[in-house]
Image 1 (cartoon, helix red, strand yellow):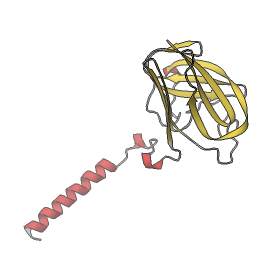
Image 2 (image 1 turned 120 degrees about the vertical axis):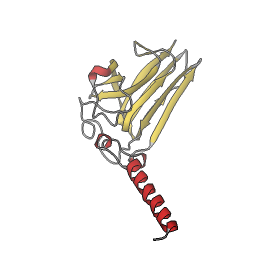
Image 3 (image 1 turned 180 degrees about the vertical axis):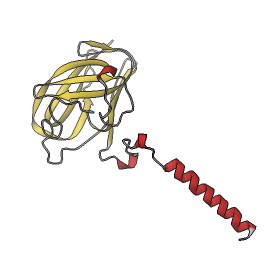
Length: 187
């Protein structure tokens, strides 16, 4: 093998090793699905009022003929509130959420769906895949909201904000024939 061929061999061999190491996934990352493997699209919902911005980033699963709550998403169990990574909500200034003051920050948004109510959970542990490593000890806030039954099913899980009126908005989460509304008041 000539010098030129040896240099090319060494270069491509080193490149192969570097790429193998960079692309390899260790056992601690096996729960993290690569971006291209997400089965549900990412959605963003936001609202802004007097310098306060609220943004929710979530995976948007579809009904696809399934019965969602009580079946696909069992009652009484922690839910990532969407698909893929746990849903995250960012609030730039303190707000009232329900009857609770929520300080500015980014929180993982989990829920516990029930037939008559949902428990809304803001958790301090960001960057989780699903709810597999959810820890109640990391909860920032928990509160309950009633379930609203819908006549027409919603195909894609949707988080939306109403227009701001009198310094208030409503964050609605709807999927299948269920909706929950979280009143939010800006300071």
